[in-house]
Length: 233
View 1 (cartoon, helix red, strand yellow):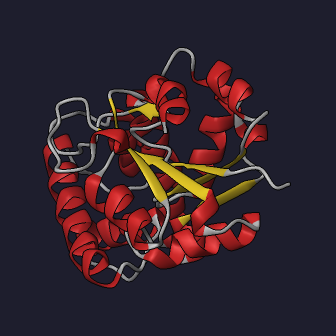
View 2: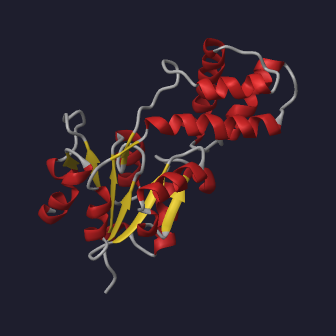
View 3: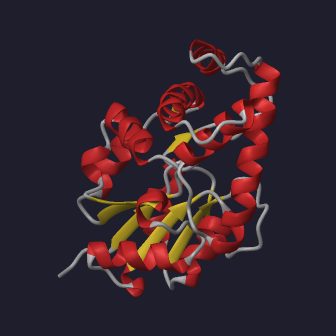
């Protein structure tokens, strides 16, 4: 008999992170740009970065088509230089910026132990929105949890992001599960809860402040409350 399937979001669910760009410094990114002859300062870099993200996000929110951070980096460089896309510079900026961004990702104590216990009763899988699959891979390897997720679907690899039901359906197809046999765990109402329920999956939403109008059995205070919620459900 096939195990039930348990799909996880990554950012905000298995790891904590700070989702901002416009109120922190990225000194190595600015230094890299200067090394390439692009003499910008922190404020100018952040202004261009935020503007570019907003432009890409406005389209993605409507189409659910994912975009790569490399494309954002290329657009930032183009705005700063007025030159056609400089892909070698954009590639270096992508690597440098993402390494700095990941400094605000923190690991949740007890997650790996929880996954170790859950794998006995569930087929585990991961569905994440991201502009860079290697960044997520590196974080999972550093956490020593990559092996728990032989089925790993990222929005940039698939091409569509949550809340599109298509990415959930694709992941279930990869795992060989059905909506009736699948649960999804996430922390964002629109992307995770609306997306997963739209695909027919059961959902656990991390919602410690009861912000959203969902059933009590669908709400958990933190990822570490998942096991108890599964037992009750």
